[in-house]
Length: 134
Image: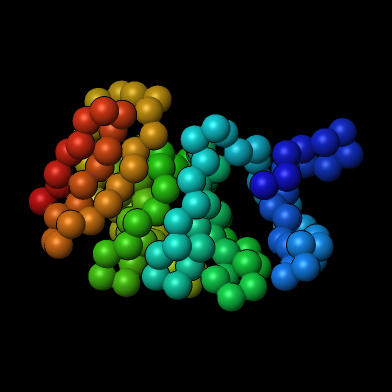
């Protein structure tokens, strides 16, 4: 992550095997201290603290971004599950298109929602609480 400067906005720097900067990819917004990277379903995803950005796992070229998210991506049945304000968005990892949203009622909180999957149960860590969704 390359934070914004006076002349450039926030960016992701891609470095080669020699540690030299090979490419710079602009980001739509700054990352927060809650930013999290994950690799799921052959896609590297990065939650900036408010958006999920997906990168191709072989060359880290950006594929798509999904704004207004509440946490990072996890995988279930070859799809991405991404927490959004109204529930869990089911995302096609190749295109970033939402196939549907599973409604989840959550108490209002500014805390990040960290999803996970255990078998056929989706879990969400909401601060110091873990919730199982069936």
